[in-house]
Image 1 (cartoon, rainbow, N blue to C red):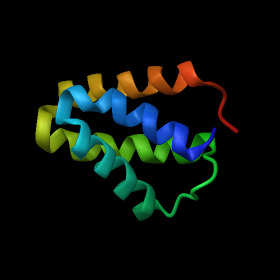
Image 2 (image 1 turned 180 degrees about the vertical axis):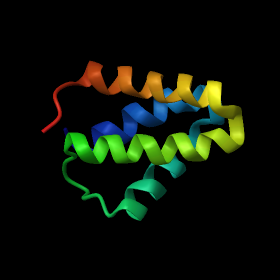
Image 3 (image 1 turned 60 degrees about the vertical axis):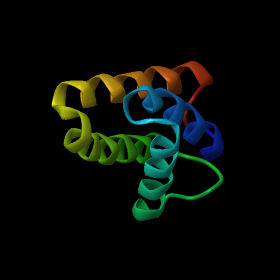
Image 4 (image 1 turned 135 degrees about the horizontal axis):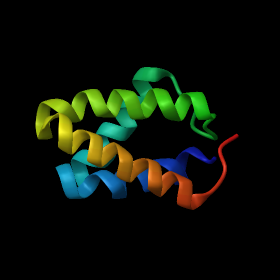
Length: 84
């Protein structure tokens, strides 16, 4: 999966929980922190990214809403295609 597509899907899924700007900024920051490449994502990288986002979301929206947000991101990623 292209990284740009994943960032867009994840950001859109998280936006209702933390806003557009914070969703995109958090997603990009965690990508950099994890050292994930800019061209494509593997399944293991997506899982690591979602875990990091979940940990951060726990602080802002609580554990239950964090789980909802990450599940929304998973559905959004599944809708755009296969992971390498």
